[in-house]
Image (tube, rainbow, N blue to C red; front, side, top):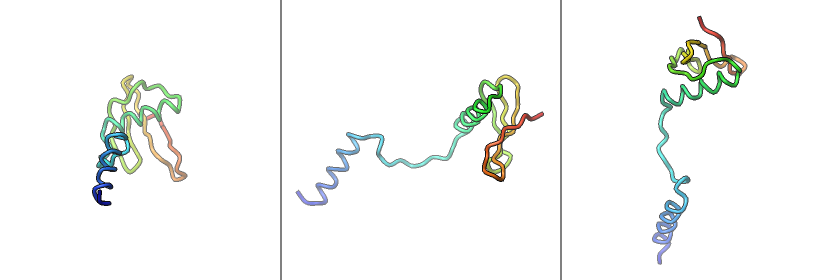
Length: 89
């Protein structure tokens, strides 16, 4: 068996044996993943929300999140790199 054939066989075996380690094309974040992330951030701050149903990006690392319970929050990263959650009107 040549080195090339052996290498191809090894790649095939690793792909079948370890499907989680295969290379994949990285996809851009979706609205669903942003909403889930914002829901988690708001919950970690101990604020009422339930679930983020709409997120509007206002800038880089700056979102307006609307919750299923009617609350709205601005979630952003400040100049110190900290995530801030403020109640929005």
